[in-house]
Image 1: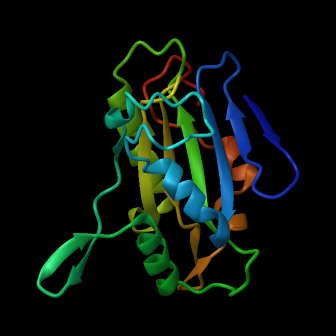
Image 2: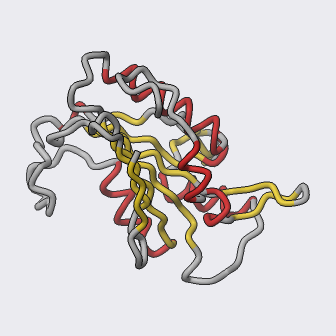
Length: 196
């Protein structure tokens, strides 16, 4: 496996299999960067929106889906779906954290279907979702959008990086996304490379 960490801001940690079997990267985001990412994850089919990513085929956007469970809030007598921002803000209100603008409040794993993968892409992403949700905690999941409208199908698994420190839940991206820990973990998905 090849692992690299580029310097600067929200540059992702990348994991690429030797033969290009699985590609995954993880980026960290401050609160000010999350809105743009939420727009990207849950984009709607709108031919009038000018997308900077020219690989998006708006005629296929309806094929995108979110694997994360729907979270709701009560407004009067009605239950309505929470936005990704509301899910993030709710979880942040439940954990201990520093109140600074430079604190990373969200992480995003992007997992790409292997080029030569002959299996069911939906099952691949479901298996990956189960792995990540188990690893980082279902309560920390913001969303898990699968994009089928780009050149290569991929999943954005976004979550709040929370650890348990002495019985107290704390926001800590540095402990949750640790380069050494990531290097020794393996994805339990059906793929040609059993070493991931």
